[in-house]
Image (cartoon, rainbow, N blue to C red; front, side, top):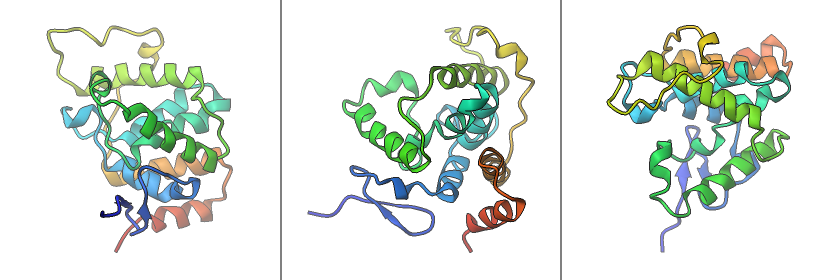
Length: 190
């Protein structure tokens, strides 16, 4: 039987059924999330999961900002399945939950995701829907309290999203600028 694996951007092999904390390097996370489009690609402009994560980190409580930035760790090695569809895939939450836990452990975060991060995620989702998706006949994007405080979002390119993600990580970790420069270059594959 063939081994099941996922290859990351740097060529490392990850077992999707048995993720390890060391599988979640910040450069790999930033790259993967910057290359993924929100709304399953059904947005008027490309809008990355990395940029979404930066926004969530800015709208949750400051003490949970790192969690806000990394709340999509389960999407580093798995696709982003829209919430309404997740129920169709038995075991999806359990499998991706292992990724969230392994990634969180690597960064010293305790699971589950804090409630204020979940609320910020919802607020940002509604602002993104306001700015990037075409309204439909089922109004699911009601004006969530706090959503109005999020100004119009300008979509960034995947590369700019990746750099923004790394900059936010360095800011939250109080890393010096030379490390930010190093991490920014390390994600680039030549």
